[in-house]
Amino acid sequence: MKVVLVSPDQSEINLLNGQTAANMDFTGIQGDCQEVRPAIERHQPDVLVVDGVFDENSKFEQLEKTIVAYPGMAVILLAKNLTPEFLLHMMRMGVTEVLPKPVTGAVLKESIERAGLRLKGVQKTSARRQGKILAMVGCKGGSGVTFLASNLGYAIASTDPNQRVILIDLNLQGGDAELFVSDGRSVSNVASIAAEINRLDGTLLETSLVRVLPNYGVLAAAQDTHEAFSVKPDHVSQLIEVAAKNYDLVILDLPRSLDPVTVRALDRASEIYIVVQMTLPFIRDAKKLLGDYRALGYGPDKLRLIINRYEKEPDITVKDVQHTLGMPVYRTVPNSYKNVATSVNQGIPIAKLAPRDPVTRTLLEMADLFRQSGAVPSSKSWLSSLTSR
Ligand SMILES: Nc1ncnc2c1ncn2[C@@H]1O[C@H](COP(=O)(O)OP(=O)(O)OP(=O)(O)O)[C@@H](O)[C@H]1O
Ligand SMILES: [Mg+2]
Figure: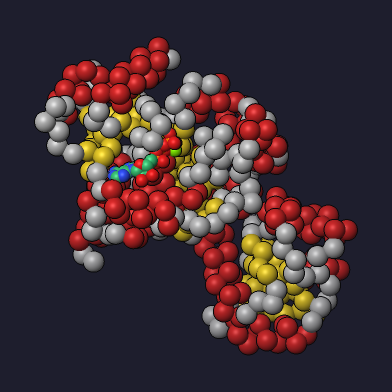
């Protein structure tokens, strides 16, 4: 991997060169923003590292032009004064990562390696087939949709680094999916993408995600009601289209309301997973929701039922649920209060926090099921990777 660092400070170049350069083709160039373009032309780097020279507002435009001119190159910026506005601006410009100064060689090296991984992913995606789009929705608040969607994404991505997975939180008012599997605050979200929909491509989408794994990220929901209203059905169509072109699996966390944005997303999904629990209020609401979905033309090939927090109930059986709702139960997910609550409270995926929890096992089995059914391409059995640990 070819790496070029442009910095006004020769001692910084020497330091970072010494600490970072092993296994990399590393070139340090002393200079400011004027040097960046000639350096790229001369060295054709895979990863460009720019030190601080673009901190001033007037230099943004110059950097943006350079980034646009070299779409296959990752850009890492080292900068002081990282305000959320500055970060957002950088991400929108297509900067791969911004590191706060002073930066150590170890941190820079990790960032370069991450950028290399992403680059491989982005390059691979240009010839990629259309990714699969799965929607998940609850028939009632608190069914467990966000927990299942975010953790299923993690389970798939963590057991197969070849799968690029994205979770899009389309609970436009008050979604919080990124917090289920990370402690990261988002600098971008569905509404900021909608505001720049004409610039949206794989790179902008990738840099807008809250990163959970190198091959798994979450696009956060809009942050307030005003933002939420700015997202229109056409934005969502375009967003899902770009996501499907750049990821193997697109998981949509959807609200149960049938507003135009949600219906547009449901239309685009090839499968809709409806999450219920084994009590009458959930089952009553599931019946209503299924009626609405059938009226929208979604047939049995598209609809799948998941019973979450399943415990053997003397009053209601799986058979009763299937009979009442007129469809088979695709999967039951066990109730595991303690580990799930800890996972959700700490923002740590349950497969990482509690690898032997029954819920983890079920998520891994579901991913295998997805693979077998062609929902995601298969390269390795999750179950075997779990049991061989
Ligand atoms: N299998 C499970 N076992 C135990 N607890 C669970 C399980 N699944 C989800 N929960 C708990 O249920 C709570 C609600 O889950 P979650 O927020 O995912 O539901 P939701 O359907 O997305 O809700 P909302 O309608 O608010 O978006 C979580 O805080 C979690 O602690
Ligand atoms: Mg939710």
